[in-house]
View: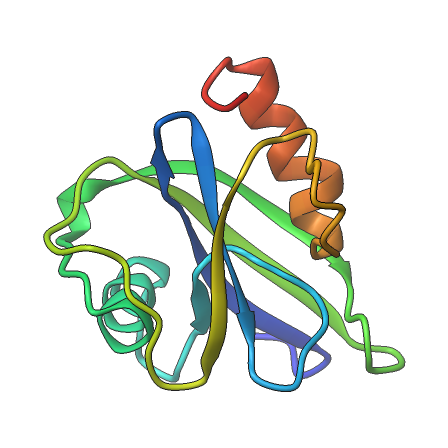
Length: 137
């Protein structure tokens, strides 16, 4: 993997046509659950681990449907790209509850009436595609 690229895995969790987003401690932007892919992990393995660590929900690799791979410049680092492997989470066990470094979670509509700050890949690529697929309001 390229050293100037941060590889991440993210899950789209939808309930009642709303998207689950989280904000980590000390951050201002909300993003979908997930995290950095560690050495030797696949994007699916990363997502299984992160969903359990951050949200206390259990998933299996068969619970995920590939949604797309997206790239953007890292928000807070020069000459660094972020590549995110995004999956729709079809099913999970447990109720998403923030833990570890997650400070806040919200269930949002695509119109974002609360005007929270959303990470660029999700704001510009993922949410419009979910709305186009008629999966969220």
